Length: 113
Length: 116
Image 1 (cartoon, each protein chain N blue to C red):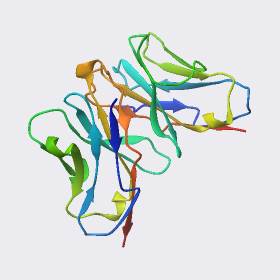
Image 2: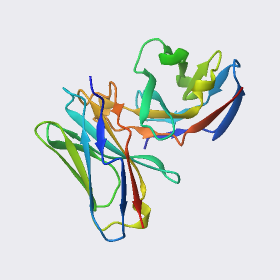
Image 3: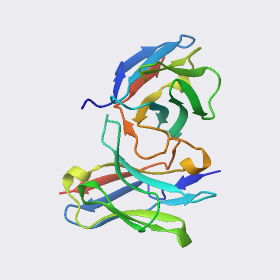
Image 4: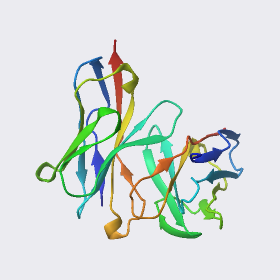
């Protein structure tokens, strides 16, 4: 069974640009969550999608957005990039929203120059 | 608001020695507690979880953790550490009973170094 796939693995952007990250969950999983990991702030919850609906949202500005498609694949978008957006963005998939078990992808390392 | 504290940023142990990583949490209801491990350049892997019932939970790779409600702690233990256990360990709290879904609050992590 394939794991959680995140693309691209690495990304370099400049300030002011926008970026889209992709996450393909494990087959059969309907929940996708996104986390930001930085050395200073650690792991922070961005948002969660289940059956194409945002179920939960963390404390991030509106520049951070996401969506989920009917096949459960998810994308997150960051507009008007800032230097502080440089981080490892992790996607996690789960069967449902009962917090039973999250499976994490290897992440997308975003560098903003 | 829920929070997790991992007081040890770095821990070094000798291979074969026992290990205990500390975790304290703050949560307004019955917490769901987790330990995850992250190797360099990788995502997080679930070691074990506590939802209810027996306060001593067993996980993968020989790890166990004990939930102590009176101390708001969920410490991770391993009786004999292997060199391959060197990684960063994260304690997390969440709770779907409060509608939190799969939102987890993580501690800042403990970096484990194993000396051969």
